[in-house]
Length: 121
View 1 (tube, rainbow, N blue to C red):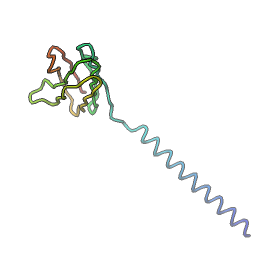
View 2 (view 1 turned 60 degrees about the horizontal axis):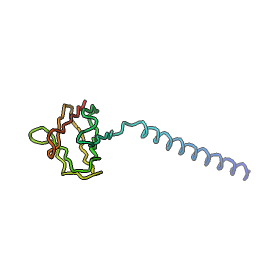
View 3 (view 1 turned 120 degrees about the horizontal axis):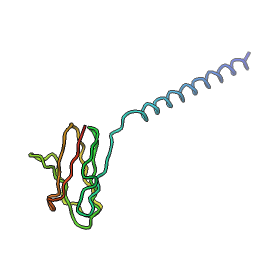
View 4 (view 1 turned 135 degrees about the horizontal axis):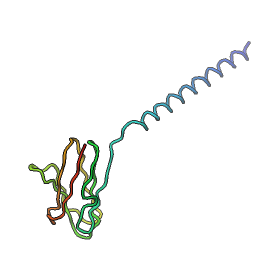
């Protein structure tokens, strides 16, 4: 009688552990399938923004990285300015998250002929 009780207790423990593992796995699958904020990079190199025009979903964070040997900025052409970086040295970065749909033009205030556009949809 005692061994039957031990067997049932062992089986019940195994079932509880299995259910716990299933619940944990399904939570991880849901988290993996949940939409993640997107991060997209624009490179600053050779006095240009690459890509010059970038289309992103609303909610995307765009990061500009200066790959040039001289300082550059990233400044919104909007008035008032939606975003404005400090002068970035080589390998420094600036990020901005586009939370509303629209067409956002920007430029380098040190070199105003450097221009780019972000289209948030």
